[in-house]
Structures are given as structure tokens and as C-alpha cells.
Picture (cartoon, rainbow, N blue to C red):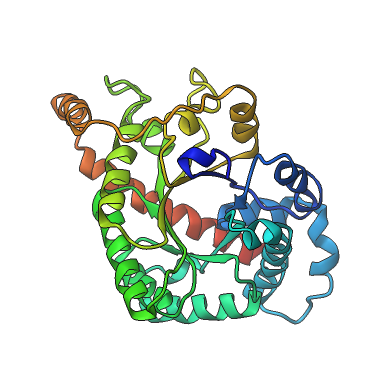
Length: 322
């Protein structure tokens, strides 16, 4: 736990084989991170740009591109899970996430089948299966949690998405009849990047949107479920690198961030609780957004679509390269 009093965890939003063998272990040993996340874009950059994968890929002739991808991704996730196992065993998170094929985001049954298969193949209790927050995803979330599979609901930009994820988890936990570790991943900085230059404080909309969603998730009181703040690397050079960690410090939450962001926060970030934020303050901000002629709800819908497409594009690029 990075901040014990807040039950706040800091996870590394990065996976790459050489990093897992070296810097990742150092960050854990220093108590800086206690978990990790991955996504198709992260694996694309690792597999296509790192020499660490060439040797294994050379042994995978005759496999389909997806089989090759899963072979190397599963190897890395197993390695990360094993490194994190001592934390997991003492109840200090120790989770690592892997996402289902994003091309299945609108197919509930295929997502369920792949989630079950990946969890079984990886065969590590401290693995979370990532499922995008779509209509099909909510069906899959309910089914997979009913089987006791830890889940990471991803690509959440809207409160409605988060509440649908929380409800799916609550129903799944009720069916499983025991706590299932889950997180709901709210994407933050992409919102501020989109709204930049439109006449509104460029660095508050992502924070306030996330704060409202966090309050909604907490109100659902789903056993084992936490808010995870994702996409927390700054895209505005005028902001401190650690801005989206410090400004989103909340009880019973996780922040997953790029390595440079984590290092900056460790070096100079504050540890005062930042959430919850008054609903009056949040509503006043979004009234300003509305008066500026910005359809914030439409902006969020667009970001959901862009996020899904970016993960699909990254996945397709891996398939093409393999």
C-alpha cells in the first residue's frame, strides 16, 4: 500500500520483459508500486520495439498471430504476477491486469469465453482480466465475477458506465457468494487534453468528472470493488508530471500511471487526501463548461469510442506485425 491510511495503491501502467526483470523489482522493493496494468497499446510497443521478445517469437513458427501474441503476453503477465506474489500473499494488492481481445468488445459470450480461458491459462490468482465498459462488457463482467475471476473494468469515462460496471460486479459477487477483487478504471487526462483551448480551465474537467464517478462507485458499496484512476500521465507540459496522482488521492482507490509519472510523484508529490470533492463545486464547473457551448456528455461518448478504437488499432497492428 503506497499510503496506508488512505488504503491507496499505486500501480505501474507498463509491461515489458527487461523492465520486469530489473526496474519493476526495484520499484516494488522500495514500496513505490504494488501492482501493474497493461493494455494492447502497451503490449504493442513492447513486442514490436523491444529485442527481449525476438528469441521467444522465433520459437513460435506455425502459430497464428493471435496465438503468438498471447504466448508472449501470457509469459509477461505470469512473470509480473510471480514478482508481485509476495505482496498478494500478504494482502497488499499484488495484481497485474491483462485485457481481453478488444475486437470482442461488442460480443458478450466471446468476451466471457476469452476471459475464462486467459485466467485459466495464466493460472495465477493475482491476475485481473480487463473488460471494456460496453453493453456486452457488463454482461461479461457479471458472469466472470460470478465465477470468482478478478476483473478490471476499463475505458470508463462516464458515471453511467461506472455504475453499470458496479452493478454487474455486485450481481456477480452475489452469485459467487464471496468477495471478488475488482476495479473500475476511470480515464482522466484524455478529457482535459480534448477540452484544452476551449475556454475552460484545462486541468479540472478530468479531475471533477473522475471525482463524481468515484463518489458514485463508493455509493454502490460493492464488496471488493475499488476505483482505479487511469490515463494519469499529463498531456499538458504546464502541469506537474504527477498532477493526476496528487489531485486524485482518494480513500480505497488505485492510481495506475506511467513510470516517469510515478517517479515524479514519489520524489515531490503530496499525500493529502484530495477526494471527495463537493458536488456543488463539481456542478458549478460543469455549468461553466455548458455555458461555453461544450456538450460534455457528447465529448465523453466520443472519448469512449476513440479509446476503444485505439486499443483495436494497437491490437490489429500487433496481429499484422506477427
